[in-house]
Image 1 (cartoon, one colour):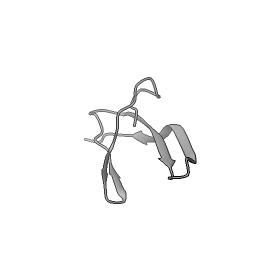
Image 2 (cartoon, helix red, strand yellow; image 1 turned 180 degrees about the vertical axis):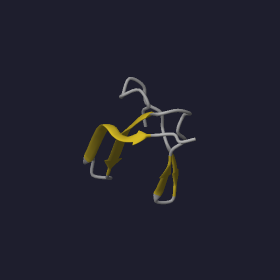
Image 3 (cartoon, helix red, strand yellow; image 1 turned 90 degrees about the vertical axis):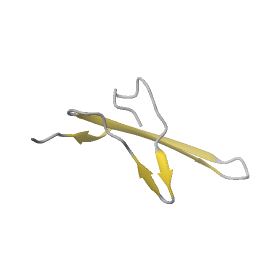
Image 4 (cartoon, one colour; image 1 turned 30 degrees about the vertical axis):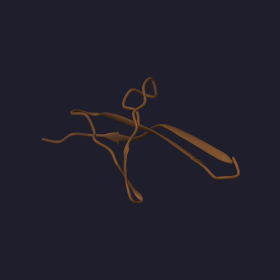
Amino acid sequence: MSYDDGATWAKAEVKGSQVVLRHPAGDGFVSLRARSGDLAGNAVEQTVIRAYRIVTTG
């Protein structure tokens, strides 16, 4: 996950089949990157910059 349009990346916590993201305070955007591979050496990676927006209320 990235909160700066992909300038820096951090690993998200995976719990079973769910991913847990801890958003920073304030408004902004979340970018996501996923990687997967198999034992035969096949791999895929997908990156979505600004996958969704964080809007704080209050």
